[in-house]
Image (cartoon, rainbow, N blue to C red; front, side, top):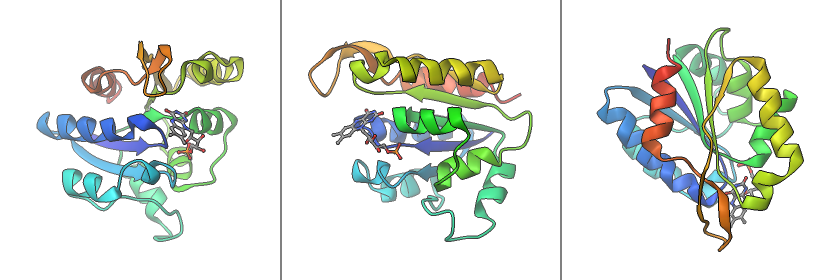
Length: 175
Ligand SMILES: Cc1cc2nc3c(=O)[nH]c(=O)nc-3n(C[C@H](O)[C@H](O)[C@H](O)COP(=O)(O)O)c2cc1C
């Protein structure tokens, strides 16, 4: 499968690297798009070295890149998915390379969304509503976060699901 992985700005961004490794070991090809804020947590070099592909960060660096990458993807995933990007996807916003490429994804292709955030963010009713909206669209598969002691010290739901579980959802969504 051709897996398009979006990485957003959260502590769990480094676990996206694990996901890329795992997907490659399973024989999938992976291309990564990082938000600007994801790059505050992990350098794009890690993802480029692991995937063997350039990382997309800027919609305008390659004018047709977002269309070509969207067509290339058999399945897309956002892991970790920030509250911000979940909100953008739910509202149909496309103001960066990740959300623009996902907007251009051909019909029938699925998007796995693996949220990771502070427990209060996760329990915020607007996040809950946005995920419900995404679920209702029939294109998005939500991989629930785990409950654990989070990087911020809070104990509760919000930890990124295990990369193996995210990959299982990706493989289930590939058609
Ligand atoms: C140290 C730190 C950790 C953060 N962790 C998360 C997180 O795990 N999940 C989340 O949704 N936002 C988190 N944020 C907030 C996001 O980085 C912020 O909302 C940002 O605008 C998200 O940008 P993006 O969605 O374009 O990547 C964190 C912020 C900081 C400073």
